[in-house]
Image (cartoon, rainbow, N blue to C red; front, side, top):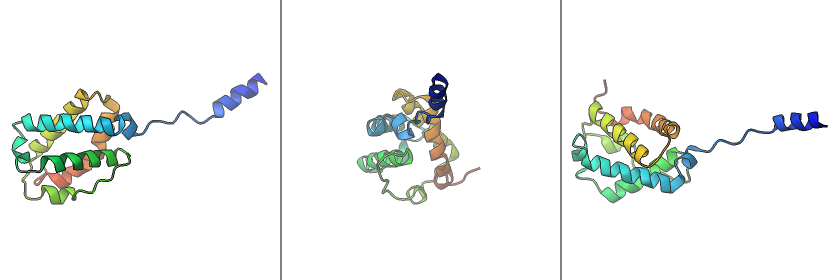
Length: 136
């Protein structure tokens, strides 16, 4: 019988991996990331001007919802398509990269481990072609 117990123990399903949403500490964690990011964007001379004429509250809500939704959380992003929002802004490759850098720093400051950071960045990466006007 001890062999049977061992065999059944090995056949058990593996411990479920947390979702990215859970790894980001849910809605509270995403709100920390977004708050950190907004502070960094406002202080970053490479991109701060891009955010001068926006509705900051709406931007924050939409970004929270977008990251939450992308991470598999219960939120629904109801903002406009990325291509529509960024059309005509002339966002350069350098500015896009600056925002990504600021996001990485915000996630570090919010205590997000490296693995979940990479998973979130991988979900955001396809938006590059919708945001940068003249990609390489």
